[in-house]
Image 1 (cartoon, one colour):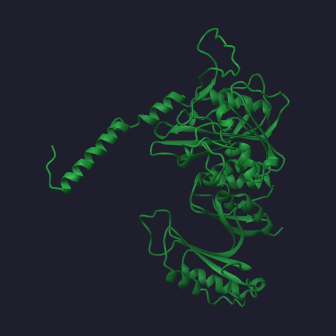
Image 2: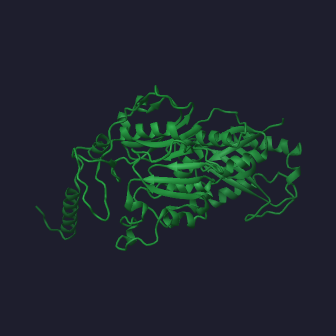
Image 3: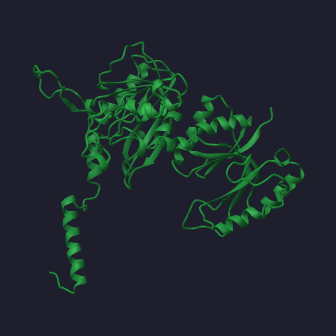
Length: 463
């Protein structure tokens, strides 16, 4: 079977997630993919795919890609690229598109250009025998010219190190990122996940039409929205009664003085026209599973609390025999629930309730200088597929762990996890710099600086 060479052109963000996303989508769609170059941090992958329809299907799901090109020329220099294109035009590569309306897009990676320079680059392709009209808004065919100047913005070479030219065959699914923007979402919380990351998790979890998807730490439901957009039937649990009932303090600064009204995860589903995929959310403690043994999920997506913005708690009491008062509404007491315990319980639960070959994805926070591969949790029923880092601050990051269930659980299964405890991570997060000023000290320093500035302005000596 004839295969075609395509260039997958990426946005330069979440680089570590690219390869896992493309492989997961290709596996989900059962599309064979051949890598012509080893995947790297450079903003493209060169691949062979069986058809244009196949690359369109992959692109439509991807949120790390920008677009896909059928590659016509790939050369180290601009002059060589033009030579190759002239030869291919003589061989008739343009014939199917010769009479169609068109436009040429120009992209410089790690460099910039003026409008005049951009026009000059477009005019340099005047030898291509286009006969159709130029249409910048809605062309029949779009061509892309790319100049690559490396990855170091502080050391940009005079000339590009690689150039590409091709026909755009597919745009990516990145429009969903804007559609699901938190800025316009009805219901959000302090820890609502960025839409791109939640869509990425749904792709990495291989969520498809009809799948049953669970988020055991659902919060404001960002992961449910993303999974529902890809056709999954979604359900979530959380220990926070107020969050699930939309009664927490408003998150948006402009409306913090106004109580929430008609805000809920279901309202988000209605907003994004996927309420038919929404099953429900349940107030439940993840350390005490509430599911029947015969319930089986296709995918489990989770972002457990880290103890920074949300507490790590489970139902319990520090008293030996707690007394429950006879009240109309009972709010159960809670105790600390360490990150190690959370992860172990999540993996043990998933080993029983996740289908065979289903995927479990969850985030764990790390202090970068103390992170070691040996800290990654392990379970006999799961195989680690991916371990992707998202940098949070200079010293901290979080890692998305992607597991696939490879066997049914047994009594002899082992589960290990040496991730630092929640209290340890929280202490390091807030005390990484011994010389860091407290909020009160910062205010005092700012007032002092303001006083000095006014004194200098008025030529007054300040002690």
